[in-house]
Length: 320
Image (cartoon, rainbow, N blue to C red; front, side, top):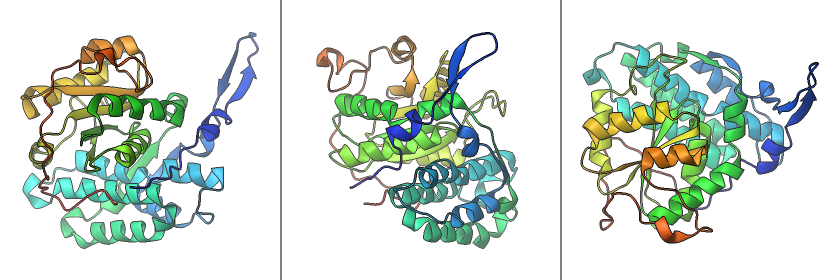
């Protein structure tokens, strides 16, 4: 699989603006205000993506609009799914999430697919009567300089290198913490896919917002839990977020998935921008990139099995 990433290190580093406050302290900020904050609906997100005139890798403005705009499709779907009381049996929740995720993956892999991807998402959502009103789902996104900085490829490259070093390119079940981790998470996922030996990893975004939405646990329907159990097979489970401070959220995610969903094997946690001491405490080992000593590369409790062809309960696969 060939993946020409929209995420470029210079776009993130060169947008730092250094400031000096009245009290004499200095620092910097990112002019993310032009790209990250958003207030609208899922329909307006689709319309905004369709209206991007300069689609390509040549313009930073276009790249940034796509990087932050496309994942709002996933944001809208996850928020709708988390807020609706529609019974599990009335619609295929995994298919809904995977349809949105595939659209963003297609856009990230080739911005020229924006019109087709947007049309397919809108047609899918509009064709299911039970999802009536989903396009009116409110989308509100705030600016966050930590998320912006942590999404930089300077971190993503290192994360991918650590994953390749530990798992040798084998297929993963890659769970992305939403919403902040989605842009970096999909970029990391696609970079890993492009470098892996099998290229059949699975990515699934999961909302667990302890502060902004006061989620008590990861927001998954029973059908989604069944889907993840079904497709896990022999794949190591990775929980990804763009940044980790105290590690409270990631500990909650690991406990949730380890206690009831995947109790038979280890679950690994990785963040782009993180304190390695926190990562070591949660995982029980130090992540090492291929450029570092491989002394601990086999640390951790997991079993390498022969690759198996997965069966999926939702119609979705990574485009090759």
